[in-house]
Length: 267
Ligand SMILES: [Zn+2]
Ligand SMILES: [Zn+2]
Image (cartoon, rainbow, N blue to C red; front, side):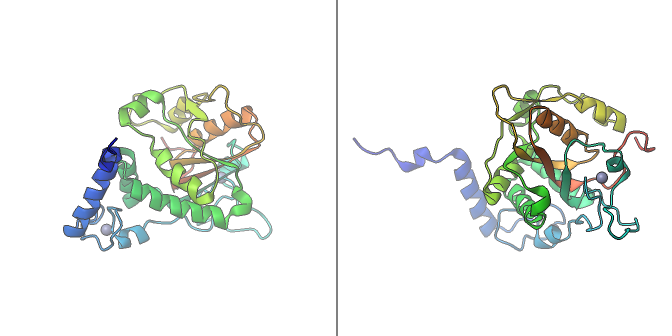
C-alpha cells in the first residue's frame, strides 16, 4: 500500500508557522512594541532592544511575595517583608517575577493573552527558568502547574496563556507538567475592572483540585502571566495545600508594584 504523503500528517499550525518564518525572512516585520524593523531571525514579534528594556524587578524585594521594595531601608540580618507578608496573607511560600507590570510588558502580555504568540511565551519561560535556577533553594519544586482558566473562558479563548508559559518552563527545568491538576470552578465576574476587594472576593474558593489527582506531599511551582494582588495565586495555593501539597511557590512574568491588600487606599 502506498504511504500517504507526509504533509497530510503535518499539523496545520506547523505549516502556518513555517509560512510565517519564511515571510519574516523575506519581508522584515516591524517590532510590535516600538515599530522598528525586527533585527533578529527568531519568531518573536518584538525587537531585541525592547526585549532588553522590559523593566526588571529590582533585587530589593519582599523575601516572600517578591514585591519590589526599592525605597525600604534594609536591616542587616533581617529579611525584607512587605506589609501583606508581615500579616502572612498568602498561602504560597514564595513568589518571584521577571518584570514590573507597566508599559511595554502590559502590551506584551496582551499579545500572549489574545494572539497566542508561543515564541514570546517561550522567551518569557527562559527568563523564568533563569530566576528559578538562581533561586533554586527557595523555589525548589517537583511539578509545574499553570493557573487554570474557567472552562468557559478557555473555550472562548482557545487556550490558557499561563499554560503557554508553564509547558516550555517545565521542559527547561526537566519537571513534570501537570496542566489539568487544578481547575477553576467559579468564573471571573463579568465586570471589566474590579476593585481590590472584588478581586479577592472573586477568587475565594474559585479553584479546586481535579478529582482523582494526586497532590500529596508535592512541591508545586505555580505559573501565571501576571501577579497583581496575589489573590489568584493565593486561592490556587490554598486549594493545593488543602489537598495535601507540601509547598507552593509561584513564578509570573510580571508583577504589579503596589500594595496588594484591600484597605490600602487603592481601588
Ligand atoms: Zn522594539
Ligand atoms: Zn510580600
